Length: 126
Image (tube, rainbow, N blue to C red; front, side, top):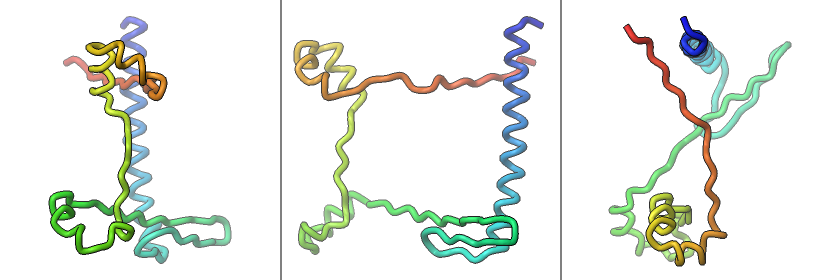
């Protein structure tokens, strides 16, 4: 077995151990959650003789944009329970940089581009 194959085998073993540990942790978390009071939303902290545990119940909220467009005029604009988020359009940035370099050069300083963590997927070959 080559050194690289040894590394890949070690990665697979570590990943399997990680998944096993995560499954055990989830099982224990379910038992802990059943043992203590929780809130319908938000966090609550409990103390035992030896530990402190905080249980947090997240609640996700989404908007149906099509329905919102039909009902939004029923509220004053100042009371609209929405946020407008401005974010970079990666495809648009890349297109401008490749096809309209002069225009991109005028605004590029307002944007940041940096690489993220490299993803790794390893599979055993049978």
